[in-house]
Picture 1 (cartoon, rainbow, N blue to C red):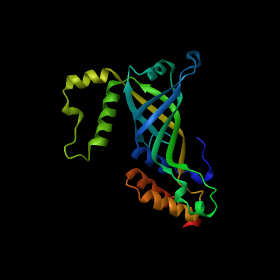
Picture 2: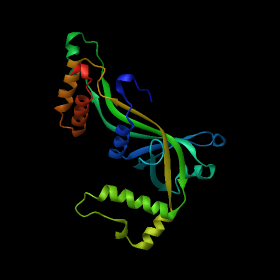
Picture 3: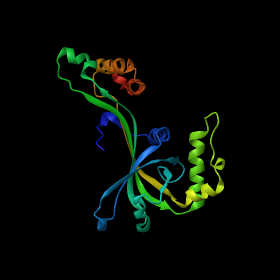
Picture 4: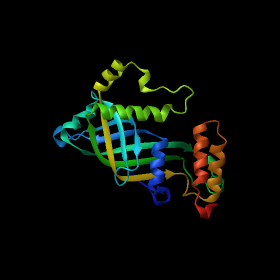
Length: 220
């Protein structure tokens, strides 16, 4: 990922917090060269174990029928998981500099975290069960009537587990990009905050808050 210095995030804790808040990642890996080195992607919700490995470990599960499972017999392989975040189109009309000299163009503000590491699949029913229970608890705990795996018939759960594999990626490198108008003049940053902040779209308002929060100290 191309990350100009103005947009770079270097704090692993910030990037891991982003993953925890935006758990649906795109797992990308290449097939072995003998298979043509084709890239393959699977969208999966992940959990993070910050205590495992130098930079933490991602874990989840996927269907045995998924072609990604072809990697299982090849051992651990390098992979990338992409975690997107808030994003919004930025109009040149937000910039006071448009009225001054007109030398402005549209852009897109966004957050992305790339987690690189060693991918492996775990063929262990108990492991998958623990993963499913942990993932369910993570996303059901704040609901008025939280669902639990034990709410489903035990034989049905066992049948589902037969078609599922665990997946782990021990993170070796994290790359974070918060492209939030940090390279613009202070007046243009003000314009982006006002322009997106006044939108009826909650996604654009979320980006406006990040633009303001990520404003360089020299432009406050």
